[in-house]
Image (cartoon, rainbow, N blue to C red; front, side, top):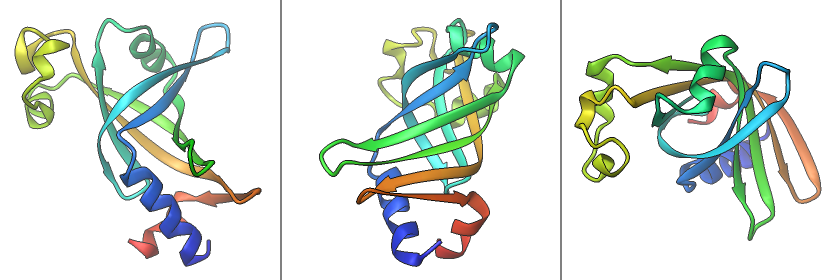
Length: 145
């Protein structure tokens, strides 16, 4: 992947608060939900939080295959990552990601049983911009970090 393209992908991800996260239901159909990006580690690991009781958590526990999509609608470009979503319920991890204001969604605080941390591990991606698509493996982008 060319440096300029890799830098555009990194900029898009790091300027996005939200990502569309997709799971696969029991019948094989895709399901999508917008989620807050808590953190990313390069372009291969992304962290989110959600309600343990959500539909998607149950789907990812049964089938971790997932995709996430970041979009800049004004600049008409986006990037999709394909990989697996790992569901975490460890208190230490939940406390590490907890921030003021989260009690709106999880009223019992960082130990709320309905508070879950998700870790998405990407293996490949597809970046679309300027009427071109750029298919890549996340390993290819590490050299530009």
